[in-house]
Image 1 (spheres, rainbow, N blue to C red):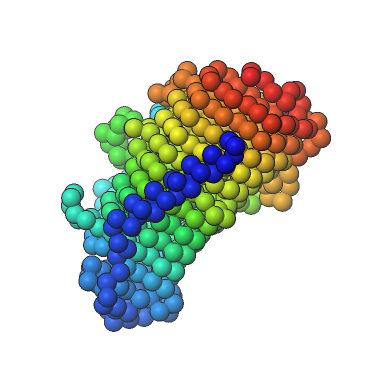
Image 2 (cartoon, rainbow, N blue to C red):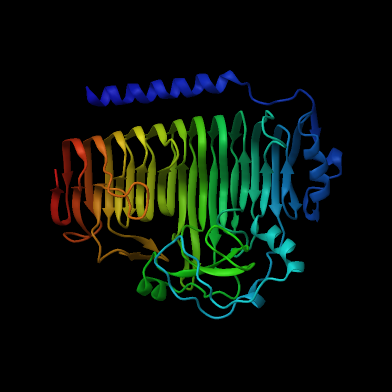
Amino acid sequence: MKSILTWFLIAIGTLMSSAHAQAVKPFSPKLIKKLADFGAVGDGISDDTNALKLALSQSGRYCLDGQNRTYRVSGTLRVTNSLCLSRATLSQSLEPFDPSPYISGKCPATGNPFIIVDCGDANVPDDKFGILRQSLALRTLFIKPAKPGDVLAVNLDRVKIDRGPYPDAGSRQDAAGIWLDGAERVDFRNVEISGGGKGYGLLLIRSRNITLVGLHIHDIVWTPYKGDTALKLAEVEAAGWNAVPIREFRTAGSAEGATQNKFYGVRVQEQVTCAFLADVTHVVIRNARISRCMARFDVGDVPWQADGLDIGRSSSDILVTGKTSIDSTWEGVDVVASGEGVDGLALDGILVSNSFSYGLKLGYKLSRAKVRAPVISGAGLAGILVYGPVRDVSIANADIRGMGSLTVAGARLQPWASQTRVGVCLDEGSRGTEAEGRTPTQISISNVTVGGAIKSGSYEYGFSNHGATNVRVSHVQASDFRREALRGF
């Protein structure tokens, strides 16, 4: 009966999202213009940047057809009107700024992600600042209304974004393949994003009535900037997976206390997020594929400090369904809901594999979340983590396998062998955050199985509860654990 009720609630959520999405019709002007009409060549070699800027400046009047051609662009394409674009590949060719003259030597480690460290690097000269900024904030397609209050809608069909071949391009907070901010309606069908560089594959914020069907984000790879210390797997493991210092640029007077315009050392955080949604409502993601969000090491590309799907801030009514799969990431799904929190999240039948740390990480102010029939394989720390001030979460019919290890550079790795690894973990909020010491409540776990990759020893507990209240557990089982099937229930 509980399984039927859970499915009913998810179905109702789907209908609600669909109804909201129909409130504003997809943007699809009757007039169609080819990108070639604006002078774009589309041979993948000629620089079509100016022609595309001309076409996009008139995007509110036409539906733009790329005729299945590849258009080379250099820099950011800014869109301030509604956009209808189909059958086009945009290939980024801007070479990243070379910061090596302004980076020297190693940085000392810091355990606090909010602190910057002066590594003795030189200032970036004023005459180089503009070029540097263009490289750090590279957004191949940047869509945002010209001024607050403007109405904007986006309709992309069979559009591909190649972020370029440079894994040292961009920056973790300012760069993206598609950066979409402030849309009243969003429709994606078979949109593909790939390529090198820090930042986001897709960043979608402050928008509503969103339908993403067949989204495919893959092979988003980052590496430290030129001049910084290259990533070596053995060295990073010895230092700690979350303790390695890397360079990031700061301007004088920034909130962290930078006094000069230069590169500073910071504790590494996720440098890539393949898909990031925040301050969104009425969202349906169907049949998405997110794979190989990676960092470049001496041994090859590793799913380290590169998330799959992140959902954050004040968001509501989000459904992820269909044959949605996430493979080879740092964290498969990461819900970090600050602000008003995430209210109403349904993950239906999602497949998550080869997660360096967590398969599903659900935290902060999440409420009314339904996780139904996920299949999670190869999670380093936990298959599902629920932590912090989370309320009313149901996890049902879950299959968690291969706990405690994942495939890295063709070999099986147990990256967290010295830490406590759990199939399903309920825990208090993270230290140093607003959720510190706060624990989940109203949690239901039913029909969940957990298994390890190695007999008797690949993880410690099948199910672990550290302080969560009002927890209901039924029909669960675990095998191949090192200590106990259930702890703290």
